[in-house]
Amino acid sequence: MIRIENLSYAIEGKEILRDITLDVPRSGFTALIGPNGAGKSTFLSLIARLEPLQTGSIHIDDLQIGQCSDRDLAQRLSILPQVPDQPPRLAVRELVGFGRYPYNRGRPTSDDGAKVDHALSVLGITDLAQRSLDTLSGGQRQRAQIAMIFAQDADYVLLDEPLNNLDLAGTRTLLVILRNLAEQHGKTVVMVVHDINIASRYADRIIAMKEGRIVRQGAPDEVIDKALLHDVFATDAMVLSSDFGQVVLV
Amino acid sequence: MARRLWVMAGLLALFCVLFMTWNARGPWSFLLPFRGTKLAGLLLVGMSVSTATLLFQTITQNRILTPSIMGFDALYVFLLTLAVYLLGGMTVVHIPPQVTFLMTAGTLTLAALLLFGTLLRTTKSDLLRMILTGIIFGALFRSLTSFLQRMIDPNEFAVIQVASFARFTQIEVVLLALSALITALVLGRIWLIRNRLDVLALGRTTAITLGEPPRRLELEALVLIALLVSVSTALVGPIAFLGLLVVSIARLITPTEAHSILLPSAALIAGLTLVGGQFLMERAFRLSTPLSVVIDLVGGAVFLILLLKGVRR
Image (cartoon, rainbow over all chains, first blue to last red; front, top):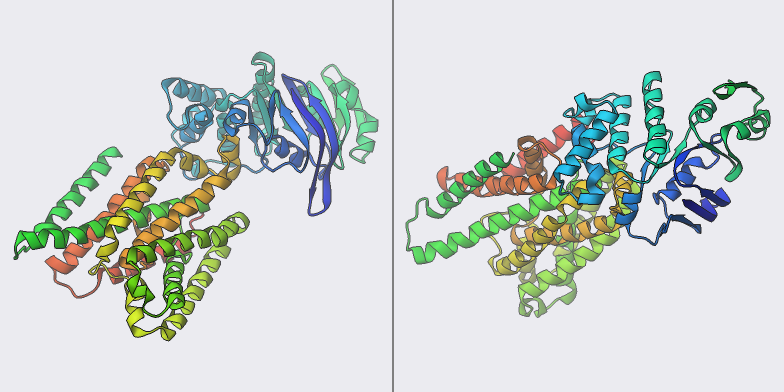
């Protein structure tokens, strides 16, 4: 479980997050939604210890962010940032291989090799394995990054708008992979996503943020309604109920 | 890739033997120590310059900047000059050069942490600003140095002269043993953290995710770089583009991002450039052009090409 207590965060005096207290239960697929500037990315990067905490505390199970060993945490939690680093001229397989670093500290075993191959095949980029990253398209590079996270095999996987560079097929493939991670492998997946319909269709749980606060949370059917769109997104769109969940007519 | 390293190692060994034995027209009891210290000096300088450059490129995540371009060695010469100026009088002559060296190296380490530690945190992503800052740092330190040197007694100037100009023919032999010790310790440490450096090169966020927070490792790398720069500058003076040249060649010959390959590869190429270059210039062709001029000419051209090509990383 990710336990967040009294989390506040300010950048140059401007409050980005205001006193958030939240539990994200273990396993399951959680979508974090909200308008631009709601603090979703900051929230996610604080959980992933990309930025130092200012006030409040975050625990990943028994590990406290900022106190625990970086290595332990790297085996427990991984993140795909909104703008991933531009890695140097590595081959795709080399990048994915770094996902095993928290376990092997740069000395790969044959077991690591198998895990990397598995990650490549799950993301459907086995044929790109030897290609250099700078020869790939944005979507292919995105998949390579996600394959690295997959190889890292952490219990908690945080993704900040992972669908950005993907086409329709890529989007659906990735969402199925993430669902699979949550359902079959018992991982906890937390994803920032802009498209409410994607959240509605794939997530087990939705957390809606606005102006640095958590305003609604729960199952998609409970959270997505006209009031949410009006209050959180300040827009009046129609919501249809269907057999596959709530559908927002954008 | 390992084969290429062995080929280069073989070539380097060959040049070392040639360097020691070519045209030997004196008693070996004189030639061996005389040429041996020179050879050891060149190899030390090669290893420290190439390693410092590679490390610096890793923590700044680009392939254009080097400690020399950022003004590290200009800072070393300035600190040395400042020490001589402040201590003044005959004191410097009485202080063993090893002590002056250690003092300057220590101060350089601190100054590098202060200046470049903050710079790295704020402007790492901005290559142009980094280059500009480096050029201004370099110009500043050099003009401060020459200002102080004008005010120094000519006798004291002799102490700093060795460190002020690049030359491979007169190596500061007194400092050789100490330099070798420091270089060995620093290189040993870098070899231990080579895998962590690979992760650091992936970028800040990725490094954190993989459990390798960059901040402390970057500062440690800065300390190691400052020590290596101190060694090479104390031995042969500032050599502007040697590091850039050899690391760029290393990336061509052994195209990989793994430090376990790049570190020895760059060091071997630096050794080849210095020992081979010095042998060819001094012994075989009997040219009067100093090797440092040739290296800076070629290295400067590489710098321009990299800059114009706009190599992002």
